[in-house]
Length: 125
Image (tube, rainbow, N blue to C red; front, side, top):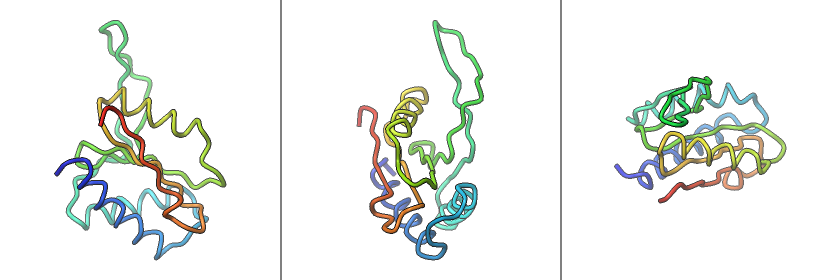
């Protein structure tokens, strides 16, 4: 599957989780349940994947963690906040660059309309 096909399946899973749980819970709740939903739909999922920093050819481990990595291609960064701040978009963009991935989804579950809470962030896609 390519990134767009994965994204389509991920969005379906996000809708399922949101429709069953609703808004306003802690991020960790959505993370655990979304991981379950993604796996139930046959997707390979890694939680809290470490991102190494490579600088001048030397690798540094600063323990940056991707919330969810799907099919080793799409990064999901989860939030449960009042507003998605610019820094969240920048953070996801940096994660995409550091991990050499092309697509990320920034997802805010604390919204009255989940469609408004899903934002695509791309890196050379």
